[in-house]
Image 1: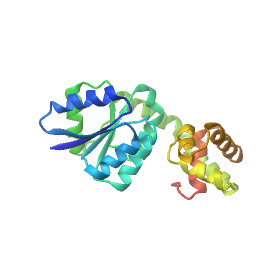
Image 2: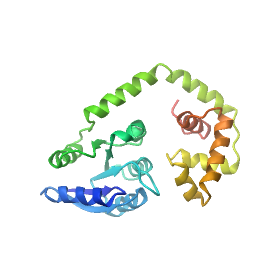
Image 3: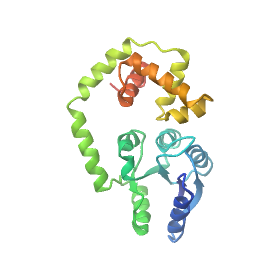
Image 4: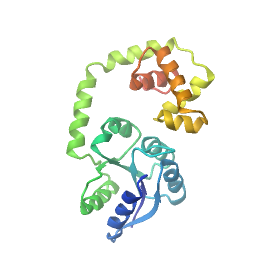
Length: 223
């Protein structure tokens, strides 16, 4: 029996997925979560084989939750539930250890088979997502080496305040400004000011470049 946890902030989506999977004799939904924090707790308690993970959720988003699950519970697989609007998160999800992607409009029988395939060790990547990923990697490959050298050089000259460091660590967990504000018990405007200050010290308005630089600064980037 394949045990599954469903994590999605939309009740209708959670209930719909549970209904579809309940028709399968070899798949059992053991828990449902409305945010990443709940999903992580369910994984700790239930040790499911698979988590169906939405990306954009409150408290802890799907990317950060995936990273925690794969680091702390490597036997649990994570399948990302995605829409075309989530394209920007593909590479982050892969880096976080996701086992594959499923489009939210996937037919029920194909959903069940995809879960079985993941448990058998298959990496799942719908053709439309594969195409977008290939395009991203192709456009990035020409400048990635130069970016690494730039990031390394920038990071060497940056000093952050204690609060900026705290905000930076939240940023490295793929948190939005709103999520950081909630986590630090500050207003979103205050967090935006800290993020702007970090951007100014790095010399960029691009969050991806900022995060790469912060990983280098904090000793967490692969160079």
